Length: 293
Image (cartoon, rainbow, N blue to C red; front, side, top):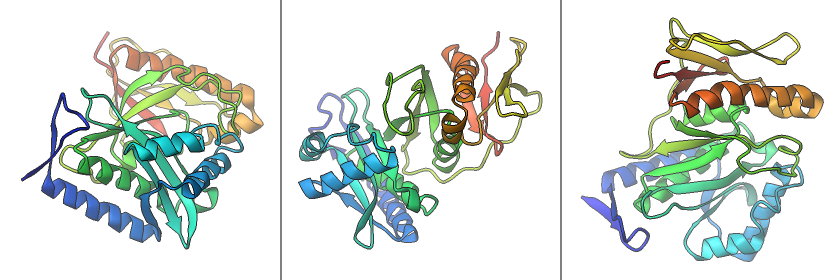
């Protein structure tokens, strides 16, 4: 049995197996129970205002402009993804997304955030599983989003916990952003694709360091980046990330900028030349497989 969605993508009808939809819903519900939250759509102005304020808190005073309330209302009204995570009546997380065009049956998750006090309690994971189940119910077989490749915890969540894959590296994707997290930094981003064919994938594990892999980006003792060249014939290179680049931006902005440029010159250039990221190690190295010199 399959579930077909007409109207969203009239030029390219998409189908999702009923069992995949059902299993994904169960996974999303279980994740929400473990986190002690309820997750659901938000469409009223009061709820959307709360989401707007939550983003402002998460982004240190610069999140209200990310998606204004009137835009949230328009997105929700036209059937796009606007959802909140609630615990004991308080909004502690939210996510907003919209559909790709007809040739790409996917949901693009534009922004998602969790209140700092709720970090590490499974709220972000439950939100992502809710997104996935929502997408599959509408015949969408992938969720995409961009993330800062320097933020190690996000890379681990995206690549290891969710099992997503990096599709591309975009230098300064959004241009300058005046918020408490990105202010003063270039907004390099990786495009993450979370494939949902067959339903939500199971959580993975950190990658091991392959034999013969060469570290082309590492950290020096003071925390600055150190790059080295690898022979063009080297099949696997490793690019490290700083432990906490948000803290580094605040305390040592020059070092944070060096990391940005170093990761762009290593990971970014490798992906631009056709390499692929096959995983992330426990120590925060991207494992990058090159196609050859």
